[in-house]
Structures are given as structure tokens and as C-alpha cells.
Image (tube, rainbow, N blue to C red; front, side, top):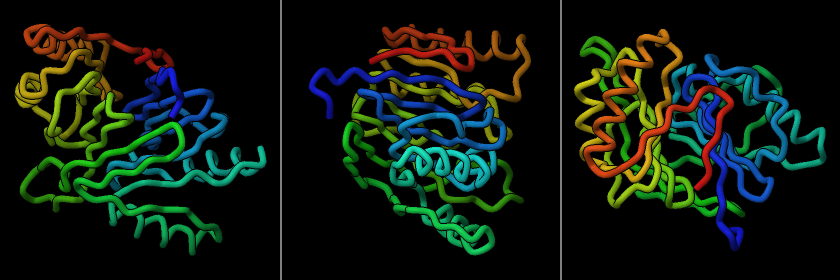
Length: 230
């Protein structure tokens, strides 16, 4: 990891986050609600929290991989749950390609050059009792930024920066308030929010902001393409 340990976090469409340290990048959940990510350079790894298409989308992965290979780099390593690894293995047969996947589970830790990944939890939040639960991994990047995927999985330590889902079929804003209150991050920002109107953003963001500030933290609303550093 870089000595100065400065990491830039950029929000992209819906649930996709980009992490950059010393020009190397990791992409988190580049799904089909996210703008095409195939032009992003120096992508070392992709982290996918679960199998739903708004988080895992083969067209995105293939475009990202093609960019890296064209630049003479190795294909990015893909860290995800067993179900995603199985999905990508099947997709590889159909597409005539391959994916360098690493199956992750609760309490796993991986170091990849400028980045570290710690994984938490194992299940997606319930949408409805008629829908089967799928696997989901929350992730802590570089010990600083925590993203729960589609869950309210709590980390086992204080959090510097919390990426907070603010809109989803499985989400109730009261549960989000409880989640943020339990985590008490130093900083937070909204993500997983492609389904909201401007008024919806204002309403739900205000709840996240008040919960964050009640714990002594600071909330930032990032538009797609905007960044913060840690």
C-alpha cells in the first residue's frame, strides 16, 4: 500500500464505486444501472457484493477487462460470493471467455497491491418472503470505507466512511436510520440510489445526514462522477 495512503472514492451510477490509490483502481458493483465503465484505466480488481444485475453485469465486466488487456495489463481479479463466481463461470462458457474469480466469505481478508478487502456477512436483506434470499458480502476497503451491499450487516469496528444505500425494493428508510445510528461513521455518503427522484434524494439524504450528524459524523451527497478522498 502507498505510504501516504490517500484514497480517492468516486461515486458512479447507482451502486458503483471507484477506489483509486496511486493511479491503481478497484471497481465495486458495476451493474446495469451504472454508466458504461469500459474506459476506466488501471483496474486492478472488481468487487461484486451479490448476483443481482444492478450489481453484477457481464457486459460491464467484459468491457472493463477488455480495456485492461488492451493496455497490456492482467484481467482484473473479481472478488465475490460463491453464487456470483458460479454465475460468471457459466457466463464464461457462453461468451467464450474466462473470469479470474476469488470466492469470498465472512471474515475473509485479502491484500491486493494498494488495496485490502475485508468481507462481512453472508445474506442479502429480505425483499419479501416469497423471494429467495441470495448471498451478499459487505466489504471494508483499506480499513476505511465500508459498504454493506444489499444488507444492513454491521462491521466489527468503527468506520471512517460509510457508503449508505438509500433506495431499493428491500429498503425501508427507518431501517437505514437504525443502520447508520448503529455504525456511527465519521463520514457518510449515499449510494444505491438510481431509483430516486430529486425529491426522493432530498428526503432520504436528509434522514442519513441527521443520523450521521447525531453520532458526530459528517454527511456528503455525491452526484455521479463526484469524489471524496480519505
